[in-house]
Length: 91
Image (cartoon, rainbow, N blue to C red; front, side, top):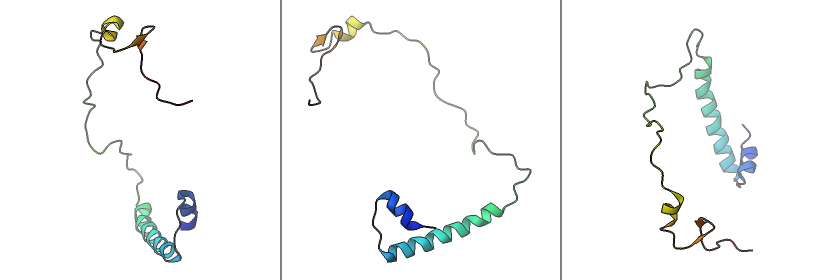
């Protein structure tokens, strides 16, 4: 595991002690996952989701809309049928 490569991508400076520590931790993680990789999963169907929940979002339904005139009636300023707001970005 090349920690210096990742440090360069993240634009962080690491001491040699930190690099050594991170390389040791990375090697420990890789060896821990080696056992998972070695597990025989032949005949096991892929799991799509761990819980049997359905989408609980509401259905999109058309509802009464507000007319442009009604919406703009509360605007402090308007221009050509749109809200008029102060400029917030400089030249």
